[in-house]
Image (cartoon, rainbow, N blue to C red):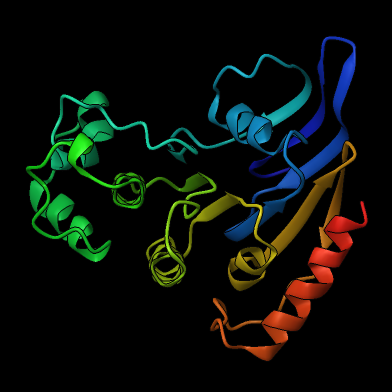
Length: 229
């Protein structure tokens, strides 16, 4: 396989998911499913982070991975701009403050680079985390509910921004929102009951506008399927 993950996972004697195969091709792969089903565990396995599970299988990823966790992981002693360039500095690369400022402006936070994280709202902090992820230029990007703290209008704007900025990359988005998955996803998977199900998505162009009637219809059908599990 190319980039992706395949195998089984368990917590002690309890299976978390059965044999799965999740390829990560260029474009957006969206992973839906109920809480506690293993979605974030898959992201952490791909990122090489501790999961507390016993995994038996194969993981294929590039050397550089972009990672945006559910929490913003902001460093409180650093400024907003320093948080955006943190990954570059930790990797020994010279940060580009002008690019960081441009990314902050693109997420609607122009002029806030000198502020501390504790002066920001939850939605602002999540947008800083998104800017930090976009700063990394990694070929594989893992996003764990990256728009969950945003109001509806800002959420759509940030979805569109991320989709444009990450064009050509392989992106794995974990979300609980069927509409979000359908708006963005070239491929959609549902992880439920320990099994991975391939869900038909919408034809290009993506992302679909929120007012698209086909998006609303498909979102309702997908939500019905999730609720029936």
